View 1 (tube, helix red, strand yellow):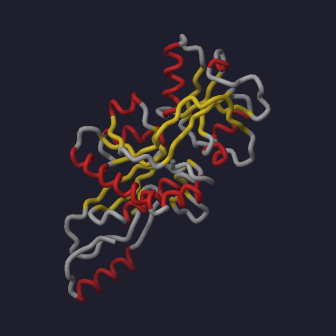
View 2 (cartoon, helix red, strand yellow):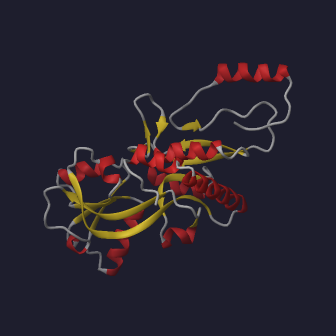
View 3 (tube, one colour):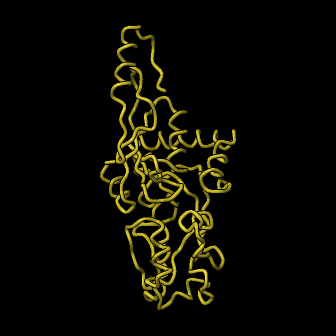
Length: 276
């Protein structure tokens, strides 16, 4: 994938042999592309933080491969940026922000929604690759909860550090902690069990993500959208290298929108075109 100058036939043979003998992939750290050719210069390795528990977005498939919409999008971007080599580092969702702040990863690819609170602390690229419309989610047979106001005195399940958690926390600040927020660091589809077994009354989610975490249709979205959010990649703020990479990624995403690749990825993984 990475471009170099002329390479002697001897060095090329050695490189091919080394790739054939040493190609491995782990669940925690996987390269998005082939190793650069021998002698490559100016290729910068970028560590991309993501998770493994969001169905169809970032997960481990039946063959043990890290894949999903965000993962395959990053791989496609990597293919179009010859000056970079992207490598995934997987972890629990709640650890992503701290890993970014402590420079264990260089950017996050995990359906990160842009909101004012996050924008104060982090750098986002400008070109969204998904648009989320967040609503209240309840069990399918629930007819009493239609809005956040209906959750007063009830339990709302959410993932710590998520954009949904921020919505609930902001509501509580303005309403004397009226909602009992139940936090979890578990997988996205844990919400189905929490709600159907009565341990929580509602959660927040988007129209497109609900079928992914609830394929049996035990839950439903209700009410008007609470917020419409751009989904973007998240970087450390006030770093020149991060800004340069973010700008380059924006240009590639524009290309992917123009040539239809982004729509194809969305249709394949998310069940519809959620890129506009």
